[in-house]
Length: 494
Image (cartoon, rainbow, N blue to C red; front, side):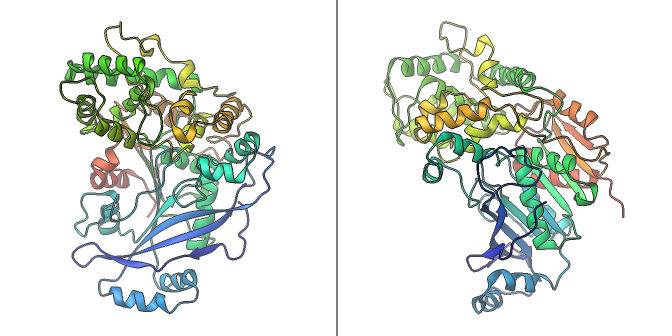
């Protein structure tokens, strides 16, 4: 890993105390770490970017002694001239057990404590509650992966400000994959915990699990966490990208089967929406275009678990004004809120790269190339199928922040790149009894059989909790239950 530079760590605003009920209080602080754009194992040695420093942000939640008051914390930090140094001084007085959380995506920031991530003194509800109250974890590091949230965010605006041509922008973005995210987490670990200590737990949700696999399969054993927990995030490391999407299209079809069997009336409702969008130009509130293909992309939610199918059904029913064939503005706003690719373009630009490694060639928009004929938009067929977690080149025409020659060229260059480096190979061959994975039989986003292949050939002895009672969103829906299950499955030396 690259050596630290001086002044790498800063806190830009006063930490605060969050009351979590009962006697549980937590310190919430916002940290920025300056890290090299390139890591020394980078697959992008042909990049034209200088090895500049970028910002990586993490929200850190520390469990406080029960008698700590907000006024004490405010007094301590308000007189500080260096918040990061004061934080380190405060935390040096305890022997923290730390958890790193790796968010799903790619392209989305970590959840925020108190809003999208609840912490309760009861120890129930969220995974964070169980970790802090029942597992004696007293520090959560919620990482905004590079390019997301407050970590040198990638957007059309920031790319256009930094680069004058698409080739340079594409080269820059090749440094935003799982290997770089792991390198960032190692930098942060050494700064927070010191050079000789590792994370007690790393929890990877969805794409965060892909990053965790990269950590385990590329770093030496002495850099591994005590426990490694995967929730719906074992990468298809033994399959080509085409084979991966062929499996995933089958899963999307199955989700469509379930949806239309529950809501058979939506066969005609969806056809009516598609027909209207094919015959009329419909503009979204943000300025993007609502085409039939963009509408069908809301099928990404079909694998979301409890309430996902119901929410999509409600969306379909709200499409037209009553007794009319006029598209409802409420429908447009609701649909737009479900498709955050304008504000999170990494998902569009780098999604297929998460499957790419040395020797696997170029992705060339694999989801579009492997699309089965029954997903072609044709209202004369029995039904029109929704798409799944799929990225298409034409998305650049429908989303306002992606709709420029510059962004199209960047996406095309990334899809044509064939010299990717390894993500899931190159480390010590080993078994992983200290790892545990939630494997969802009916997962629409991560194929069950390809997951089993990876565990068998790459992550031997990883403990498995196999279930058809939870979907990909299991960590969000039953966080405390799932965290407890996986934590206790890990075989850890005392």
